[in-house]
Image 1: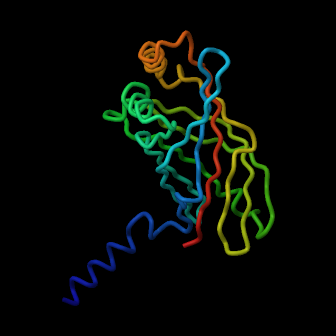
Image 2 (image 1 turned 180 degrees about the vertical axis):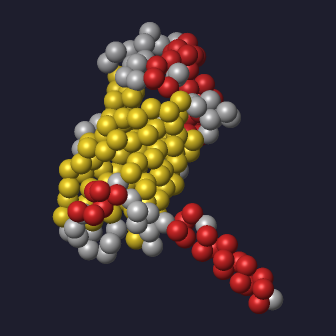
Length: 191
């Protein structure tokens, strides 16, 4: 019994979340994007399931469950998951960034405007983007990271153009935008 308890405690201590100093709060975080159809109709969408962590050494990682896309139209959710994101082969968008230098200067109840190089893995393709973020550490130790400017994603960079064309054909639309602005607010709770 004691050996089982010790083994369980050891596994818990070695799990990635236990090693993280901050964990992403899914309920207080949002990654959203805008699509434009027919050249004039803009629609906002978001992902319902995001997980992530930030270590004391400044390593940030986040996973967005692409099948959790919420467009407020169930059939469109299914079509985006299947045809655009191809979630059976590539279920998550992964983002990694090194924030070590920035964590050293982040002070409680103050905000910093940062330009962060972030590595994004989507549809099996890795790309590094420079992202402008506003970072604030709250009095309770939690950290909020928000996009200061929308991040413009070019679907062709991640081999998503065919998926957009499929969605366009299914919905019988003359056009769907090929540049997608993405915004986010991430709340990291101190462990």
